[in-house]
Image (cartoon, rainbow, N blue to C red; front, side, top):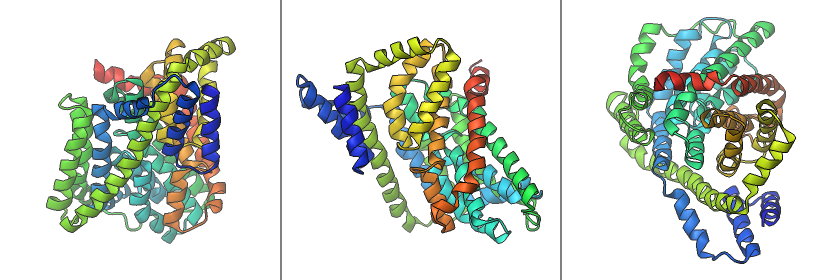
Length: 425
């Protein structure tokens, strides 16, 4: 059955069949090959995969991010970031990284971050003399923080699929998010210094006090989300509902840049995005059930045990595997299919499941900025209006920097688990 599922899945992918449909059809092929399983199992398992309270956070966080994008919040976060780091050479590029980090604490989506922030900062960087491909590369790689800084939809999916605490995963994402953001800011400062870019970035930076006062209502959203979860006031799912309420109040009542006539469009976009993710989740639930029933995870665990005799070797192999898979498979699908298989093996090697969740998500997040399926690349190129092949040479240094961060996250667990232990105690 395993071979039938694997072969059919590859064939469907090569045919260009959508990922959710490919996973579902491959699972049906596996059931038919097995012959002893009732077809009623398809509907039952797909429904069970969606019958999870934490999954309610996904549409609500998507909605909160869409409300923030249309409510004038992204522009104020840009002004705040520029007032903090924009006065040095390369400060505008650093502002891009910092703004993406702040916006990621609201949207939970790297693609939403790319469009919301890139629409403001890519033209601004080009006007200051940055080459378009470099500006798009900075934006695409910075938006990757959208899946690291909590709230993170991939972290929710990992938590649900492996029965790991979503709250602890959110806390664990703080350290890796800050590490990647700091490394990217250091890289863009070096690039700007070597190439003589960004000499006039600080010319029109807003005063810090003015920018902070203007951005305070916008900052209320991540404060409500993160503070509420860490203080134990509400769960991550309840925090998503609170985020929607605060985003509505800020966009409509305070900034008054979110007209009521825009709400139907925002709700439609949220429904479309949610439906796509939920279809993948339901299909992956059926797929994971069949894989688990076949005993494949145990076989893989036994194979890893014979090939690798240490945690270091196992984690290196997992990194290589996930980096390759992330280039070709969408992040949500990869998490839902692979996490239930790899996490029990990681636990056998003594890896904390929370720490392993960050390793998985950071690995697959790299796939968002690497061809051929790099969704952030396509989004940044669409905003910058350039072909994707022009961005690749500029992107190499950013990918290498994130890989260095990934190795630190992998082999220095305290980066992820330190904040968790501190908050738990």
